[in-house]
Length: 384
Image 1: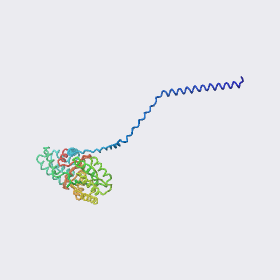
Image 2: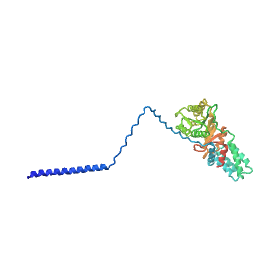
Image 3: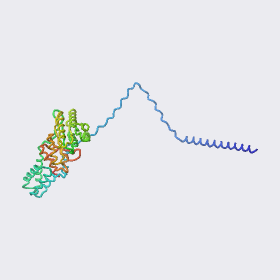
Image 4: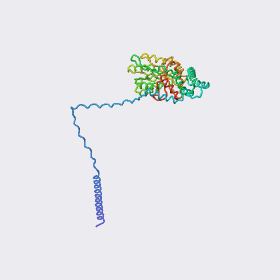
């Protein structure tokens, strides 16, 4: 055969062999895929649920019951009785100037002229005032002239009785929380800037709620930013509603609306918070007089409480005199009667105004406001 024929035969042979090899490779690949697919588990699809038959005669389903929103949790204020003992203990633990003076006279080995002079000077420095101090010293000197302080129990009892007499236990310290002719009692709280009126109104509301009274708050302090929010927070904590107006609103209008709401709702007491007023600013004091007049058109004001900072001393007395001329004060609330407070202000402010101290505050806690009693106050001082 010639070379051309041999070349053709070789090419044909290569084609045949290559095709056979390709077929073998393809067959092996197909078998491998079949084996792999055979090893894989089948994913079973869930059968489709049969369609429920439609009953055209069946009644329409009832609407779903609305989910009730849980009522806000209100706090349970502490009762007045338990406050008294706790606050007396706190007063006993203070560094009150009056308390230290009283303990100093009881711890003296002898009562000579110098001892009495020092005692008198300390009492005057405790804001007790010259008149009450002179009265206390003279009466004590008479009682202790014979035995002095040789009998500590007798000396202590003599001091206690004289102090209680100065604090005047005969004064009516009850809060008039009962209105006339089915109307709510209206309690107006006044005072200068920074004495904590809004906080005191909130604490007073807690005290009334603890006594079973229904209360409504009036946020008539419309000049101080966030005053209404602060008062409403106090009210919300004990489930008490707060009537408020926009910032800068007429305070007399807000006070009137609060009293009107209290009349319509039949609450026991409406507490009105007022803006802090400087006692030497005639226009602000006139505004306070306007509030009184407007409120009185809807219901009589049963109480007007003046809040005094017990640490202000003689300056607090000046404030009290001016407020009493404008608002006819019926009671005093003394805040911060611990620590730096001198204590004697209790006696002097009562004598200056002729009205009783009705409540005292001895701390920052929500229930650190308690009714004032002469005996409790004196016992706290003597137990210091």
